[in-house]
Length: 458
Ligand code: SAH
Image (cartoon, rainbow, N blue to C red):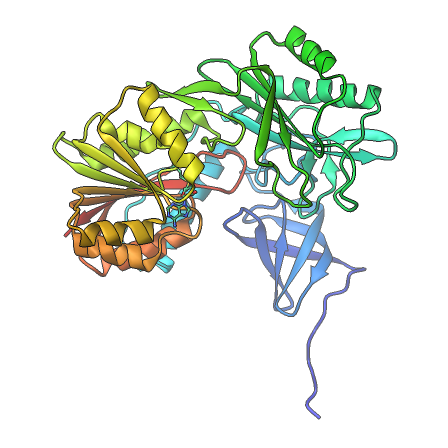
């Protein structure tokens, strides 16, 4: 019989390991007895004592017991819940080091997957003040004994971690969370239990318009009417006169999806407004809106610059969401056609164009990979194409159509460097070349990086 020589690491032993790399999410990686070991909260060059908490055939996961030698890029995380909370993954890394890490991540992907050895990647554009940058928070609600807990999910689980002050949210959302929690607790209103599907309050969402200062509070409930709603409305509005909207969102399904389809307004109007650049947007509970409005403006201005418009161009804005990029482009283009698969987002996009008095944009519902080949067959052409796909990138069939269509420029906005690299490779092999790569930090203290890339016809 063949002998299996599978080594194992002991869970009862302390190992010392040197961290030699970082994953794209910013998790430290080292090697022990031939095993790849992932260790959260560590940095390249550090020597750490770890305990093994998980092991599979090909890798292990360790947790830090002691740092023997620390990196000069290490800083003290500002959040006391950092070790547990699933929200931020690289708060132990200085902000400058984070920006370098993100630039490097994009560069490595373009080299390794994209085969672009000499590509120049600009330094990631960071935030001057990388705190309180999110305009939306969705707190899950649960119980701990008889107590109501409102916080964030723990890393890799649905246990709720309470963090008194989450410093990537505006301060109002911390306080609104506490007001809602105390109200439900004092009034003995039940809290939803994921396992049984019973209980009333599921999530508390707070949205803020950064330029308008308007606030929206959404209670996501498994039921219909919030008991004593008038009292809660008064508590909230007495505290913040800039609350413009309090909504109840009904979600009675046993699902991980946070919001249900039905909203009722229990105070004010059904939406808040905000601006990106000079464009105004109305945001309702279900509307998609970029969560970091300051950096969104930076990103869109880069996209507009790379589009190089003179006023005569027809532009396709693919994966257009609520039409934000389309509106940015419209001022300098002859015509913009936005394509997006979610019908509600297109309805928002049309409303947003109207709200801003913009008439040279048109929005179509459908998959980009279906709509664009059809338009192309019917004779439509674009001089410039902007794509901003979800993490999985573009379908090859769409890229093929773009290659056939031969636009002058493609501006690729990406939230995932590896699919960006794959798609850029295809375009590079089919008559296009990468001119500029600009990462933008939309999510400080997390490993995510957004990039905008200018690709031109050779
Ligand atoms: N450009 C927008 C949204 C980008 S997010 C903005 O900056 O705000 C990506 C968008 O692609 C989402 O709105 C998602 O609904 C949409 N989407 C996903 N798959 C798609 C497809 N196959 N065709 C068109 N749109 C798609």
